[in-house]
Amino acid sequence: MNAEPDSTFRREGVTPDGLLHSGAEGEFSAEDVVLASGRDVNPKNLAWAERRMAEKGKAALDELLP
Image 1 (cartoon, rainbow, N blue to C red):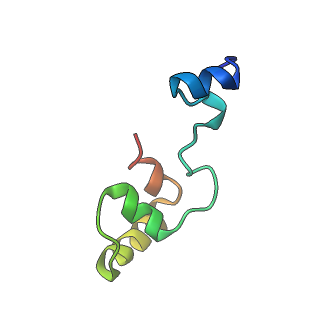
Image 2: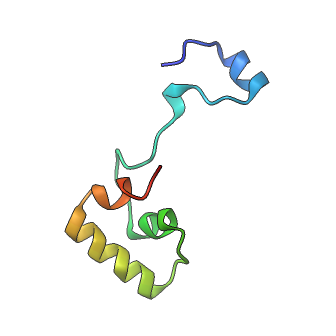
């Protein structure tokens, strides 16, 4: 974790490690999976995301994030 003070964060524009997160550690929706994949949110892509979530669970989102 970055021990730099918040003033350094604001001045340099660097996000402290403690604030970085993917969002996959909590609840996520089919819309989140669609957006992480770079696709448009529409019924076809939401259905794809729901199938992916049912098949892969949390990995459905983790695999799409850098």
